[in-house]
Length: 255
Image (cartoon, rainbow, N blue to C red; front, side, top):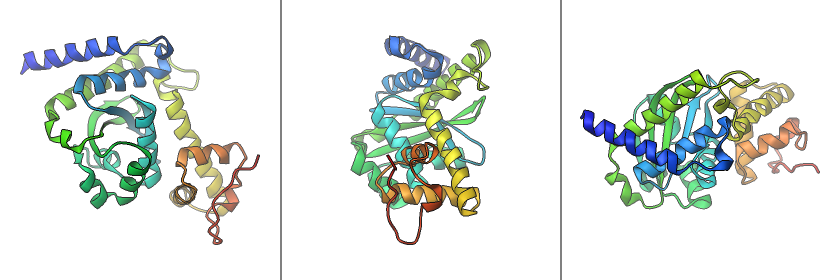
């Protein structure tokens, strides 16, 4: 067992070296490098890393590709999915497309419409400085899911989590507070959702969960992600008081 763990660690280290690119050589993009290394080590189509964000939900940290990043935002827009469940139950979730359709039909529909992925495996990966983490693994061919070595996948996830922990200890922290990897572009996009949620809650006298539901419904009606819609609310291009009104109209950003 010790030899096997050592072998996985060495393969992950080599994969991390292989995915290093000049454009990723900034502390904020460490999760992107780690997600790419996870996908390469495990031989899956894509991977994404996230952490809990208190009562507000999940905060994505980075993904191995733009399409994997989109898949996470679609799951958040749908309101539930494998990664949400893995976070909540703290146990692995395996979902071929039939499972996605049965358990999370809204997410399955969005995933099929906007990405090539047809199966997801979500794994809790232990504690990070920001809270419990999770790793999403995406598959274009659902027949590849049974071939995934669960022990290996959990070990790789823990290696990624450990790398985030090491960076939090040894690297300089961001002026915004916390390690730099908490403030990458993906996490900042989700941060705008929390800001938009507050504005909708104030404008419509709603609780925070109800305001998030309004944002999600408006985003789905406009065939957008919550993150994209929230960006327009925060920038003042969409009036938060007008979201989710009874006329059923989709929100249109003001120029």
